[in-house]
Image 1: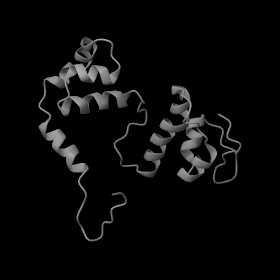
Image 2 (image 1 turned 180 degrees about the horizontal axis):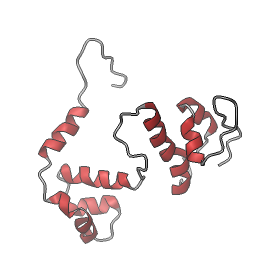
Image 3 (image 1 turned 90 degrees about the vertical axis):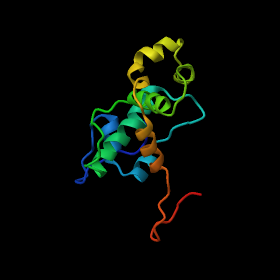
Image 4 (image 1 turned 120 degrees about the vertical axis):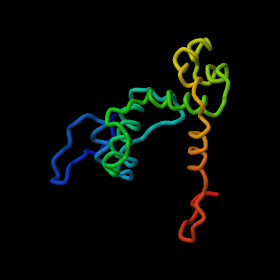
Length: 144
């Protein structure tokens, strides 16, 4: 993953850890300057994981030490989160199987069976509340 700019620590010494750790040590704008991804081509999982996903997790942990992210959080966990949200939203198992790319609905049902047994009303209400915009006088909406 050539970027052309060497990463250095506070003392000016080169940073030589894994690529994802080097990117995580950079501020977001510095990482954007060093990383060039061609979004018109399919992105290989390994490259995305090392250049984008893992540094993002490490950066979040660095800037927000109290966040609940596990240091070893894996990208594949996002698939489970997505499936869980689909179940909680009441999407049928057949549709979830199609969204997840499962060849058979039985795969979806066997992996996520425990989710279909629970009532997710409270969880969906909490997630919905996260999307509500605050109405305080000192809050300015960034997007409309």
